[in-house]
Image 1 (spheres, rainbow, N blue to C red):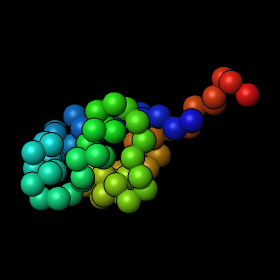
Image 2 (image 1 turned 90 degrees about the vertical axis):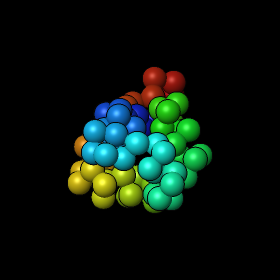
Image 3 (image 1 turned 120 degrees about the vertical axis):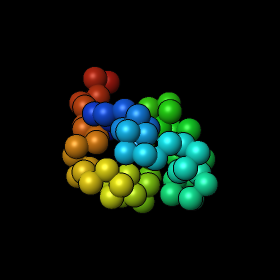
Image 4 (image 1 turned 180 degrees about the vertical axis):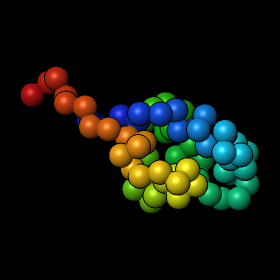
Length: 70
């Protein structure tokens, strides 16, 4: 399963993108913001926008963790 390496919303906030700005400028939708708050995965387009804002590669934001139930 995929998990976040960083607190995405906190990192965006440090770059000047708080949730109000993300909503107001329609950068990331409300449903994606809620998924990020819960630590759940967002879609690839949203991840692409986050990578662009933070100037990071997806591998700096998410990682694959082996699922224990097989």
